Amino acid sequence: MAKRGRGERGPASFQKKMTEAEFDEDMLAMGKQKSKLASWLGLQLRTKFSYHIPTNEFDKQDWEKLWSDAKVQWKILDDGPKDVFIRKAKKNSTDRRSKLVRKYVNKNKTPFEKYDYLDSSMWPEFVESKTTKEFLEKSAKAKASALNNKDFHRTGRTGYRGLKDNFDDRWQRLMAISY
Image (cartoon, rainbow, N blue to C red; front, top):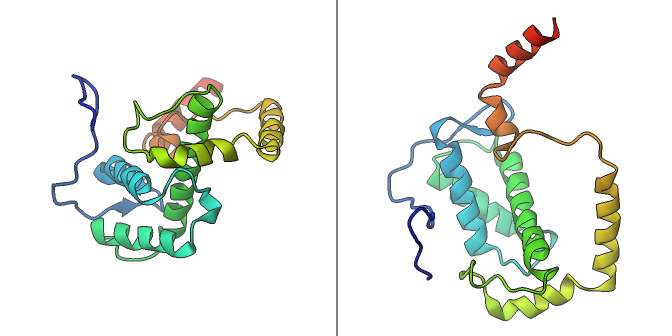
């Protein structure tokens, strides 16, 4: 493992006893544990789901196992947040591969200096799958579609979950400005 310099963040540590995760009516994590749950999810995805396999090719049991591990780790009592949790996990898994394509495959670089946990033996297979004619056509079509978007989201890096904590305050300020 590469030595990290001052100010660089290492892997999240989950040595402390975690309290029960809390969820709002939209089944999004909230409270003090929301960022720890997000970090835990990222760590699980990184260690249990290989980057070279597309998200839709993982077995349903893999996602079910991830959910059951989360229920145990975070003392989640019911399956209410399950669908939202798994959907978020799949999106994070897909986003991780997209980032590898943008930052490394498209620039003919390798990510192993920065991401030393990645399995380098799978890199040629990953690059080959992301440079096929079919993939490049699909990518070009998606880029063209994205350019047509005129209403970009502005939720920030925490997404809707981060906005929701301050939603009432922001709404009141917007209402005051509009009148």
